[in-house]
Length: 359
Image (cartoon, rainbow, N blue to C red; front, side, top):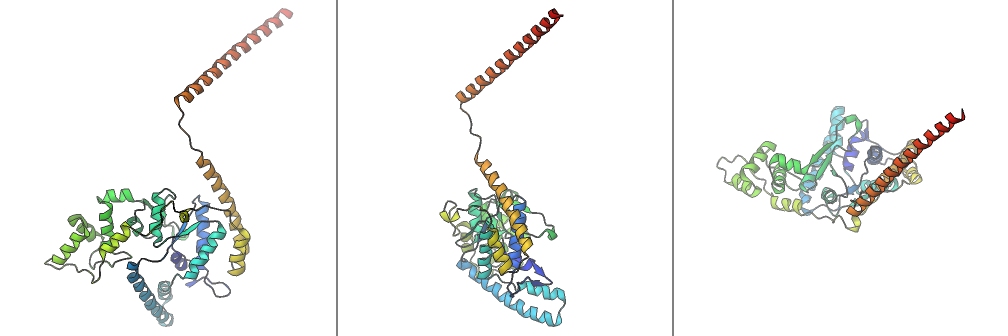
């Protein structure tokens, strides 16, 4: 789940939502109400936050920072001479997720009783570990790289607003690989070829070309060799293109094992008064809405807990002796019922006979 998506999506008249003191609240508004919507629909979310980014990602982060600085300049120009649409477009590009945003979201989740963990590095990689271990059903992210981390199921659009009317996409890795006719390593190579968080895409290589190159050459090593020796010079590799390092990060990411104590989590009852203090008194949310939402969350958590308790009691296969014992008891009950029925019929006949004689 992306705090960034909440910051750019939850807006009013092109501006992020603010408290009376001028603090941004879009991230809290988005996380609070969209988490509530998930819980209302029977989904029990676990949030995973990014840890420190891998060193290989520093180049990509630097480029993003530069793009945001450029967007800041363009946004200022648009305010002077541009249309409302241009102002909105460039303003979205200037949005940054800060450490404070992350800390406030974690505080909110704790008050809601919704569990979260902090990954060593990439959140998507940690989500994949938990999904493979069966501790969660799927990894939910807009980042398709999540599949490269070997997440068995990827859910997209899970936190989209209802206004967007985008159905949730459920993507199964095994079916994806089968459909492409690839193994996991080839799929990773395909994604790297198209560009990811760790390396730039190759100019003029789109999805169709990338798929064709991987199918023809099998590995990125052979694709690179083909490009470098191609007499037509149709494609040119970026100057710094550490594709092997990128592949290694997908195959062996820095993650915690699913049975690590830091990966233990549970859903708890919400702290209603704590939510009121944080969202209403500190951030200026509407008290009635917060209390109503918290009460609804409290009710849904109880229902979820009951469902989980019932889920623990699974049917255990019976032994042959137990089956014979149950059959014997069943047969005895049937025989006893037949005997009682005969006795009832006999009693009724005798009663009728006595009544006839008395007349």
